[in-house]
Length: 564
Image (cartoon, one colour):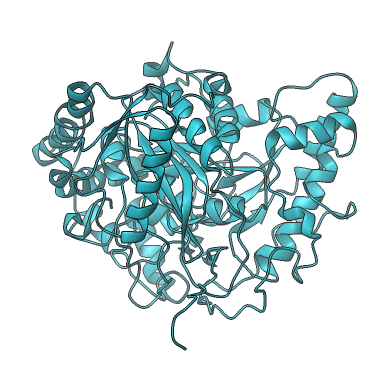
């Protein structure tokens, strides 16, 4: 979870700690040729690729130019590109980088309808209709988000493979309405990393182990690992992840991305395989703050299928780009949340310290420290709440979806029957703990939920921000990526996700520097519904610092100056 090493939950952290070149090419065969990696193949770190995207991957080096949504809209408007040509080139890049070359294993399957969708959007553009900034833009989705098409929605598990969802999740329908081309589904930590106490983030029965594009033997983090690796590697313009605690911000930290975990209720969860109805939310993962703002605006909306969205009425914004201000830090009061959110990694601390200096130079008022003193009280109650809510939510979801697996108990039985494919490296201890829980009327659940709300909100974020009159809390997002370890599981050292996750409040991470070539981000955390303010602050920092740099797909971290 988040915090220093002495703030760990009594089990492994479960969620986190997530302009194209070349000639137009015939679309590669989707699904089959791109998903042929054995689920039991461990990462070897011995890929022959040690250079950038143009180093022997078969894709022009121009593909590494970090194209933004605005860049590609200009190219389509001028006729230099079309939605079809962009779709073809990203699919070719997926083939060259995700399954060949560095073999990131970040994509589970591509959309067989992507080409036809792109063609129809090109026809609309030719007729003078442009839906908005996402018109014709290729987007990737985490594989716990339902699409009512030829692709599957499985949370990475073979237990749910073979039966596509009946319809799009609400946010997918919104993205399609905005003109996005749904390019494919990304790999993830299976069941959003809520299966085992010793799991390796980024591993799923369907996709095997996803790799970090900066150093292939390091972990992209979970559970939105595939989205993080894929968007960082320029396999699409933007992606969607989901978070219960850390699964957007941690892979964004590890993969050098901007990640936005919105206020719970700003985005509908209908059609997303659940863990927790009090903490779950989807959110954008992109290479720039502006792209994240565009994506978030396209996904918000009231949805009767998710009652939590009723709270977003008059709070959701269809255009978050209006809040982007390069001078947005001038006069802003930024609280440095040091207790448990600094001190777990010297490199991350140094990067955050440099970021604080940058904010000071931009006119921010730094309040240091501005500690949330209740963070240490969140671990046990949060885990208790999630166990109860996971069982209740998953059973409800599976019953409505239909298929052979109708309950959590059925999923456990499938795993036991298919141990060679589903349990080759780690078990399902968290599944077993959740299965033992009672209904949501259980006094133990109610007590734990109240403790979470009081310590994260009333005595947590709300208290410290009111006391110091803050616009946001600030801290490192997490440590650099750890070595992937299928034997012992994840061994990250710390992060900042838990306080905002438990509160259900917004959290934005922005790339801020590198430690031995591995990216590290910094976090802006705010009160409920403060996305406009956080975007303003994050954009101002990003424009002044510009720390995002494309990955080079190195086999391992380069430790310059170390003895050999």
